[in-house]
Image (cartoon, rainbow, N blue to C red; front, side, top):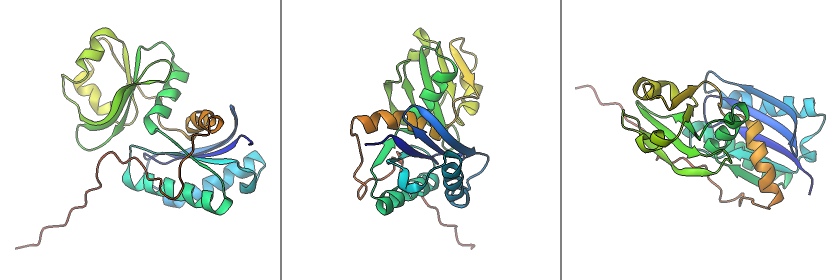
Length: 229
């Protein structure tokens, strides 16, 4: 099987598409700032194909960031990925969003003991996990409300870097710990989705396209406005 992978990352406000050939990045297009995946995603895919000098038929597999993250963002990304897999008869590969963020952060700085990506949820809550320097998960993915006692055991013995769009609000309560480092790097990117997906493709770690669903972590909750009395 060939190694051309089209990667999609829509778990946060960042809309990112990348095309890779094994370890080589051929094209990438990404933009953040707002949730506009529905408007941008297909255009980004087209731009990347043009830049890479290939067509959709040349792609060997589709990779997608599976979450946790924004319910709507994940739904758009996964729906697009599954649609491409169906129409092209190509395999689907899913990648943990937080693991890909940790891999990106490690590419910036390899010196930290633990890597803690954080995706903003509501109020003081984040989606988070811990990864070591080998990009192995060391603490389960969870939706965690952050307070001054959070991660006390990990921070006692390790220098931990906190990053992602949920890290900024956590600095307010964890920033005084000398082992806590906060970084603006490590935001989600399809480039690193593809790096992990490349290994999964080699090992034939593929999803069932018909039944695959994003990892929302929390149920999507809708609210109904109260009637005026």
